[in-house]
Amino acid sequence: MASAAGGSRRAWVCALAVILWSALAAGATQTGVAPLRSGFTPDEEVRRGREAAEGVRLLLPMLRDPGVDGLVRDIGRRLTAAIPADLRQRRFGYSFEIVNVSDLISYAFSGGPVFVSRGMLETSETEAALAGLLAHQLSHVVLRHSAAQATGGEALELTDLAGQTLGAIAPPTEHPLGLPGVMFGISIYSLEYVPALEREANQLGRRIMARAGYDPGQIAEMFRAIARTGADRGGPVWITSHSDPEDAEQHADLAANISGRPPGPPRAQPARAAQFASSRARLKAMAPARTAEEAARAQMSRLSDGPVGEVVVPSGEARRVLVGNVFQANVPANWRRLSGRTAVVFAPMGALFAREGLMAFTHGVQIGIARSPTGNLEGDTQALLQRFGQTNPDFQWVPVYQRIRLGGRNGLTTAASRVSAATARFVYVSVSTAHLRDGRLVYIIGLAPRGEAGTYRNAIDRIHRSVRFVD
Image 1 (tube, rainbow, N blue to C red):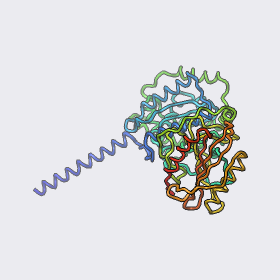
Image 2 (cartoon, rainbow, N blue to C red):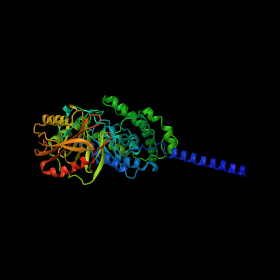
Image 3 (cartoon, one colour):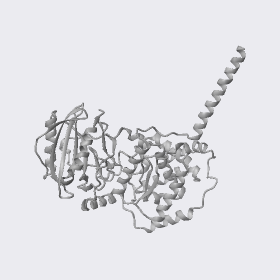
Image 4 (cartoon, rainbow, N blue to C red):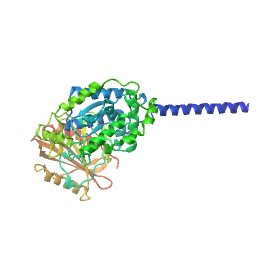
């Protein structure tokens, strides 16, 4: 009886082992890689990606050629349809757009938006090579790389109060193209270079290509073409922040095994060479594309000279945001997030304009962190207001403060006014401050034209009441 029980037990254990091994093997064969965990819901990732895409469209020109755009969208649709079922996110909305600049740049943002430059298209010698680039970027989105890296929020650069400007933010300067203003608000959405993540994107990208009917080896071919073109131009090289061709090539056998196909050309490659050749000819017939820097500076100039758009009133709905790894707050759901080096702005559509290389706004809030020059909250607040007076000659304020509780801490708030450089109207300004545990100064500035101050004051008050410090 014992022997029978023991045999039964051994059989059960063996069966369980087989089941577990089969499950593990099936999982490895089915996915090969897995999405990173993110602190955002899929809906939040989609929203972040849309905000980043808006920033690209705001300051860089889109190609908007039906033929060429149609080709890229078609390739994107084929690749998207080939995403393995176990990696699909039904909330994501994938889109593929062409930036009309000559630089070799591409962006993939959480939730679905993918951008590729005209320079990249002109570098692609075949449709499969272009599909390799798009599959690589698409894989970053599918694997939620950007969202996972951004979970911690911005790490704002600590600055002196002497560097503060009211109602404007200096954009990040560490962007590889070195463009002042071009990537404002986009740095917190962009993917930082991590070799392991690039390898994962190559691995999944090859699998997606094979499922879509493309030769997976064309990822490496595209990377080689990019490296050659970048070296010939002597400018910033995209390849320096992505996997190199040899690294991509190392995953050929693995990707082929995952896709269930032997290495080499796909079984059936669609005859689309004519459409691709036609698109390349259309690009050559167009006027040469500007560099991203030239295009962005021209757009900044137009924003500076043009009128501010129609501003949308604050939404009654709110969303929770993390600011500078320091505190959380609820902001109107229809306000966009723009990040600079030392401050974050939440502002509605139509409230943005450019001024002297800065992105400025007429409605919304500016939140920043600065060193404490006095060690005293009232002294720090006065120093901040004095700095605003120096950078804004029309800034008016009376040093009268009201004590408040901001996120459970002692704080101060005061009101001021100024004349908007964009609208020539008087602007209501609220300034609230508090100290972090390490002595740094946090400030929240609210801006709205005098006639709309009541509506925006309510929105700003709701932000104040929702603050929760996490430092």
